[in-house]
Image (cartoon, rainbow, N blue to C red):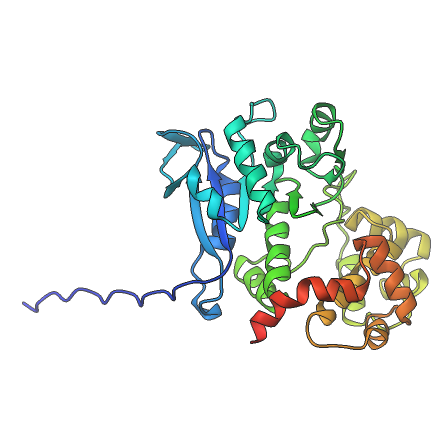
Length: 338
């Protein structure tokens, strides 16, 4: 009888040196939201080398801890490790009406003072709101919780339409899946579009949805044979430099401009012009952090036609000039190319 041979141990993962991400674990944990943070930041990605996120799960309650779905969980660390984290993720909260412990809010305030980013998914916005750090600022949450958040925290401008918002190192996202969009945006800011797109491909999700994209549609999208509107989106994205008009887009799917506008808004939650401007801004963001120095050239490549128009749309959507955006986010992208 042949001797049994144990399979070889997998190769040791590289010692990581990137930002330290701490995800809160608590009794009544929102399992899906925790899984999002774990998948994005905690999954081994040896193809990226050692400059990648370090990951911790931090229990803020004494055990045993229960999670949605009948699970019991044990975190790797206690709340004290939050004090070393660069990014702190609140993966939903146990209920919009559930109190937030003062010890937790004080720990989060201290973390923010030392420069950490605070991130929430869905109802996790109630935890960040309880810190007072969002007072006078804008935040989003799941549209079902927006009114309750608005009533409880009148100092916050509650945006129930956006997928995610970013204010002074505090990042909030809408319903659960919007957390994926926000986490990918964090990767994009830290490491550039190529790594963000790589992670999105492994997740089999859209590489990018703008934070200002609508959370939900007012009525179901009509099912149209051939997916005419969807095909237009892809064609326009691939040819952003062209001078697109509503009539030109409508002609691609053999609709009248009026019908096209109605179908487009049903499918995307945005008017065609707003969607097109957003796509051009996103394309310009990628070019700004990937080595293109000439803002005028970038403006032409993405279809704005002039640096003046590009600056206008950047300021209206991001509150930044293109050069300010590059200065803020180039460091992370440059690490990727180093």
